[in-house]
Image (cartoon, rainbow, N blue to C red; front, top):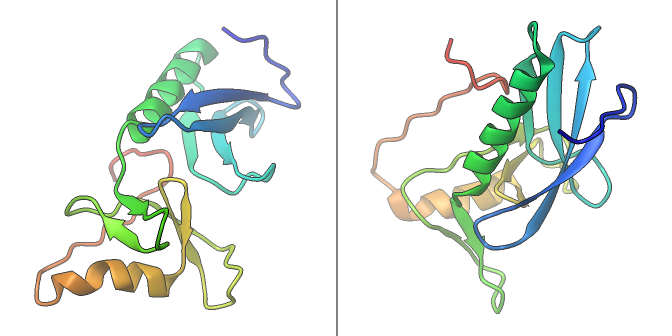
Length: 146
């Protein structure tokens, strides 16, 4: 296991399914009860977020959170065309995290893969599915089912 500084945490690198390097800061907080992995984008902790309960053995929590990071980075839901900048949904699901940081001022943004999407962009992605049914599940970042 990487040498861990309990106050600063540790930044680890992971490859996503496109071969891009993604950085996550792993930190223990709440008097040692929880481990958080927060993606660093542009040096700021504003990307994907995962949380695990530490329990009796911190090593188990580190293993679980690393597995969850690798599993999420092994799939992709949205891609932005490098030539046109247009967004495309790659499959019939959109999995991300709601974030309160939105540069446009139009409300919260949604973090999908390594992209920060506005609600207008999410709407554009869903427009081709007009008339389809949709389910929206909101879950805690721990990933545990209610």
